Length: 270
Image (cartoon, rainbow, N blue to C red; front, side, top):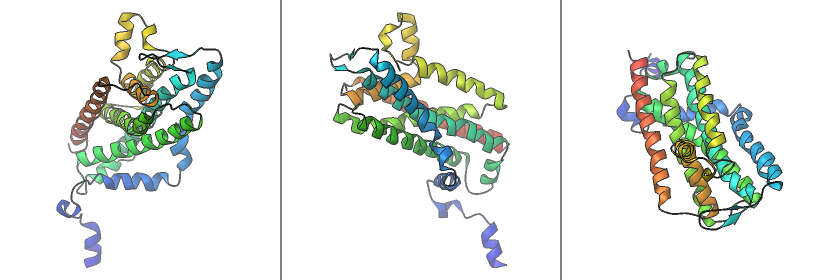
C-alpha cells in the first residue's frame, strides 16, 4: 500500500525544484526518438530551396554587393535566409500544430496540471523543446553551408545561437497564438503569415528593391530580423545594429511565452 501511494501522490514542488519544464522536454524526446524521420522533415524544405534556387538560379544571377562593399555570390546571399527560415519552420511546427493537438485532443496538459507542473512550466518546456528542434535544423544547415563554402567569416560561430534566438521568438509567439485557435481551420492563418514572410523577408533579393512603403512593412516582420542577423554573421558585415534585431526577437519570444502561460492557465484551470 505504501508503494502504491508513493506512485500516485504527486511529488511536492519543492522536491522537484526549479526548471520543471525539463520533464516536458524529456517526454518529447522519448516520443520523437521512435519517429526521428518526422523530426528531421522540417530540415529538408529549406535545404531543397537552397539547392534549387541558391545554386540553380545562381547560375543566372550575378554577384551581390553588400552595404560595406563586400561582394558575394547569390548562393551565399540566399543561404543565411534559408538558415533563418529553417529555425522558424522548426519552431512554428512544434509550437502550433503539435501543441494544439496535445491541448485540444490528447488532453495532455490537463493531465500535467494534475501534477506539480504549472502553466508556466508547460510553456517553458514546450518552447525549450521547440528551441532544441530549431537548433538541430540550424546546426545541420550550417554544416551544409560550411561544406558548400558559403560561410566567409568567423562571425558565423554565432550563427547557431542566433538561430536559437529566432526559434525562441517564433516558438513563443506560435504557442501564444495556438491558445486562441478554435479548430484546425484556424491554422490556415499560420501559413498565411509564414509563407509571405518566407518569400518577401529579403530572402531571395535585397530589401532595397522594394518601394519605400513596402520596404518599411517588410522591415518590421520578425523573419526579416532573423535574416538580417544571420546574413550579417555569415558574411562578416556585423555592427551594433544587430542588437536591435536581437532585442526584437528576444522580446517577441518572451511576450509570447507570457501570453501562452496566462492563456493556458485560463483554458485548463477554469
